[in-house]
Length: 495
Image (cartoon, rainbow, N blue to C red):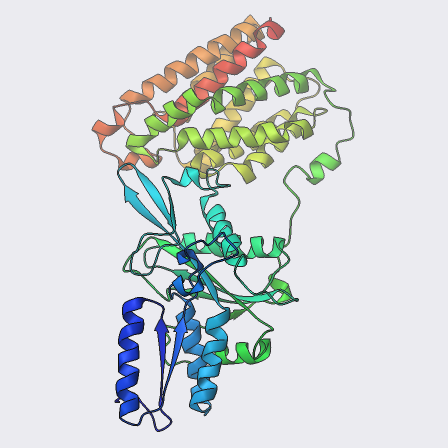
């Protein structure tokens, strides 16, 4: 009675039994007082249908979800412009009948995140459950968010009444505890998947619209345009100004300029196109290819990844082994395109691959180091000697120290690299095989010695000394491991 205007009142009701019953009672009471009342039920949640993969579903089972927000916004704009109660209710029903929603949330159970698929806004259990992110169809490490978005959209599309032009409005809703970064990844994945399905995202609403306290989850809604009142009229209502800015973020119109532009991968660089010599045209190039394969093989091994991650747990992000593995996979995938005519060009090529494929401090260290090696070797005439390789390694150490601010004794990768370079230089006269063997021994000892050092640079410097003393620096150990693998792979060829 208090909320009704002279034209009457419209109730937007989410499809929950208790909500429907109590709103029906309120409507009857109002009508008994002579108030005109319209009821619009929103049942957009396809995740709550009894048999959401079947063609024969009982749509009365669908709960209300984010579709209620779109319904209220469009109906509110219609009421604001002066439409009558019947017209406003017509707008609301036009939205409510077409919008489809699916939700997903994470629940921590014991030792892993469980996925609730089709979860409700009151925290109700979903239509199905997966024991971990690894069980998400199509998910791989670093791709769980993309797989989650695609799974929800596929299920929504089974129920959405799509127009011939396949133009839609998308709502990406934060259920309360999902980070802005995760929401951005989900938004990206949504646009890409819909584009791959030939669906045009005309507009997007993105924000915290319907929450379940601080639930770590999200929902996706599709509102097909071009039916009912038509696209222009619908977008006009949703774009209309709103005083409740905290509840309605507005919609973003997606133009042609928002389409994704694919860029060439790093391997397609000018350097590679300018390399016209045949593959494996220098002995150093052939040795380098063997060395890269040997180094990468040891760094992608499960034992190495686990060991480096474990070392990194006390003083870092527990991902040193994973970072080395990912970088190695990038190099192995691009190795066939590596130029062999010039060893300096090959080093630059490897640096370019890591610049795009290796994250964190390790990525920066190796990119800088390889660029410095390339610059040093570019001055060589002919095949580099062991002494020249040693000087190139020292040039890498100087570059890393200059740009990163660390020095020998600070408990970093330099504590393995510099002793190895020094040993290579000091033993150059003994031949390549002996010099390389001495370099490996020096690197391993240098890495081992980092366990007794106090970090004065790198992430470990923020950790207590007792934590630092529990293991050696993982970056230094990783360097020593791949250097040892390379020495073994080249031993016969260097003798």
